Image 1 (tube, rainbow, N blue to C red):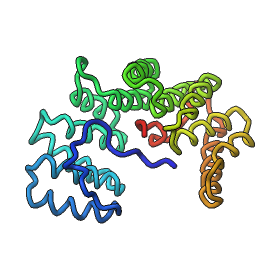
Image 2 (image 1 turned 90 degrees about the horizontal axis):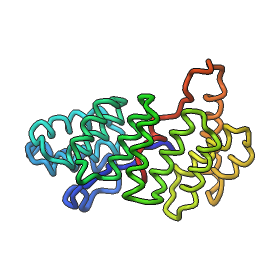
Image 3 (image 1 turned 90 degrees about the vertical axis):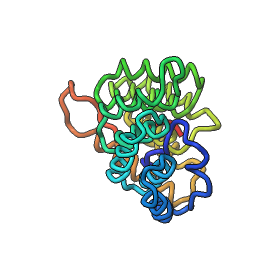
Length: 244
């Protein structure tokens, strides 16, 4: 439920064509191609994406860092490198790199949303929301962006507003599992656990439903722990990641 989504931004078809379904196998295949020609930006892009999908986040960031040094103007590489940095919790650096992956006169709404999540993780919530609003102007009603915006409100404990925003996201036919998870979390944080449990279990096989309920309980217990009034509500980085 908390796995980061795949790369955002414009990734060329050569990077994604005929990718093996198994992440480990994909990492092996694209790794061989990359090592055969590490200067090839498409090979680095595909390898970095495969490493991220396989959970090798630090290695992905290292490969993509070298690729962006060799190809500083390659926006797809910068977009993926920014995501890899965010994977590893380097939010300020990720934000800065993503700023180079698109431009104000030609913004990528997906990258705007990722930049918003970076700002939220740094505690800059008002600024983050401006990025989400900008993304929604380009992609109205996108459930992933709305989900990120809802979580931003959750982080500042504006739970009714968070729920309203997440219900908009959940109503979209394009809403995925992450949106369902985030809505359930916000509903549960307001003390309506039975309703939250119903949300995470809806239309799922029993084993997956049980796993989702267990995860929901874990998150609610984490946020129920005693904390000072000034402390911000916690949320996993992955849940704040860019739209599906």
